[in-house]
Image (cartoon, rainbow, N blue to C red; front, side, top):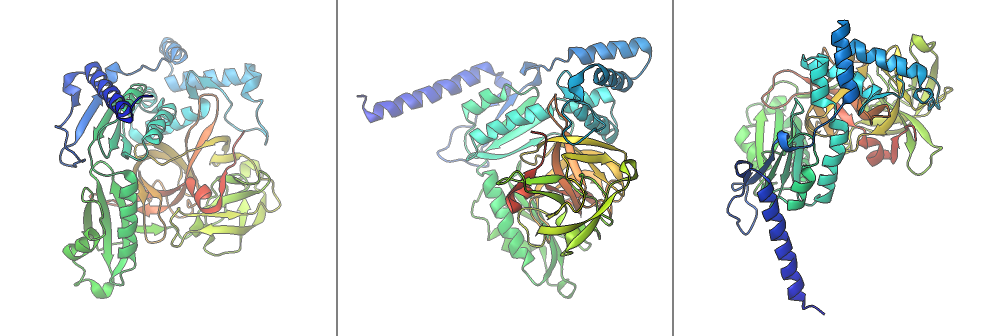
Length: 495
């Protein structure tokens, strides 16, 4: 039998060899390790950058053929793609075979790795970012599959992960670690078809950041001299940000240094920083509003998705934002005129809004109509939901539907954002007023699904919020994880 110390030595040798191999496989200019201290230090971080030129390439032969055909015919790529999908839907029986709740407007057709549903999201992102349809595909086409691989890295090293973000143009993924970058994480990141930046020795984990944010947010929210507070964290810098509105009677007494001192006293990890901004105007609001198909008309709100209990497949509910319920025991749900405008009265069963750490959501019965796995992504079109997003991510490209402002798309800018009522929200770069407004609350946020499927449910429109250093309000959402965390339900999708 080997001596225990021999096993430990062998393990150490193997780890050193893995690190050496990783260093040899990368250009010297992109693999920089600080002199290794005994403990993680936020001032001595290490960085590994994987250049996109060395990462796997996405090959889309069908799309390339459609580009050539579009150029030859003198039409746009979008027109060529739409024609291909329409023709494929006519001749391929599988494109319309899986419709357990009746016909929808998007067939189960794919162009290479791009599902027809994801292509709709990409069209929206092209418009939102002011780029061509082709550029939007380059930026965001591979992200649904890439994100699953990124989440595998985070899961494998969940006790060490400091956070992750994706750049708004989709070109770079950043992953941070509390301690040294695991060599295995570098190897796993080499499977991502984008530039990857891994940063180690940051000194904190994302769990620590979120717990610190919660402590600071709750303490400031309970202070009678503070009228309103919004909080979030920046995983890259390890900073918890709080935007504070003093109570009218305490305008003179609430000072930034004092609030900052209070916030700093709640930090248990010296690697985590705090930033406090005193503001005079409102920092968050919910719309003064509160289907049986998702995305339907709830009068003063829009509905979200339909959900099913995790413990009983036959127990299903209709969902919307929590503040749309606001204690009301019933609401009236109506389909849009394209589907006859049928209405029914639905009854409240679950609500999570005020002081809700999971988000902003409520559940209702189905009334006299039948629940489906479909949702409206605009007032005249509907599609199936095939998945639910597992975790909100900075840089995710999403679209939303609300009955007031319609369809719009953008990217996630801040996650785990908290306002006066709820936590676990996220804020996007979609300007409030034009991209979300009263009546949109509860509406579905969604992104592209797998190549052979339809949409992925992502979030719930809940209101608007501001971010430090940004002017104006931006559309805020609750992530769909609120259904599992608060009620034990999940998005009802095609199995």
